[in-house]
Image (tube, rainbow, N blue to C red; front, side):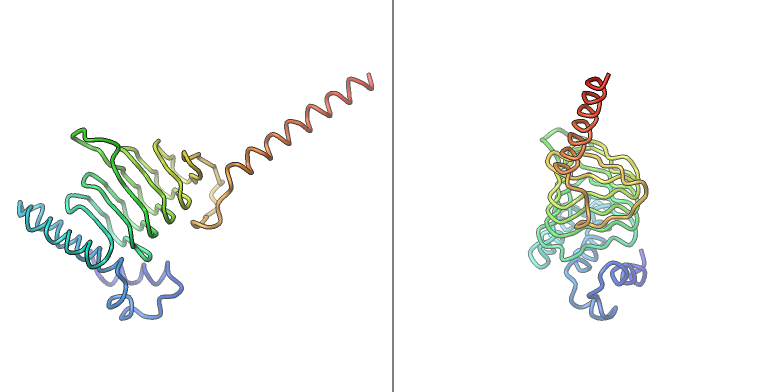
Length: 206
């Protein structure tokens, strides 16, 4: 898990990042990930109390809480980071991007797999909640403040509360430029109304 490739990922995803040195010294999201890597190493070697102590120290200093048992792939970028919670059985693939206030959480106290699985190149917008042992497919986008309780297919976007899947035909969206689900429904209703009006007008002419 190279530090260099992670720093490059931050530069790619954050236009405000001026240098790798600045990211390394000042970005709390990167610090949270580095703390997690160390805590996860300890957790896998059965030093669970020490791992939890380190993860709690990371939460106090970075505002990001990552359980040391979580599984996180390469080049994770946490932008701003404050308020992020990642549960114990969470799995995150490579090249994922999380914004502030994201929760990858559980829905109860049942044992086993309780938290989400994110594929590769998944973006989760600020304030979004992904809850339970669900899967978010590769290249998916979760809009800001969405609440996701069901599986998300690859290459799709989820918006709203509860989360609704919006197919985007491969268009890459960020956490701001996402469709409004209410507006989409209104547009669909308008289209149906226009079709009905056209049908009524045709029958009158007949």
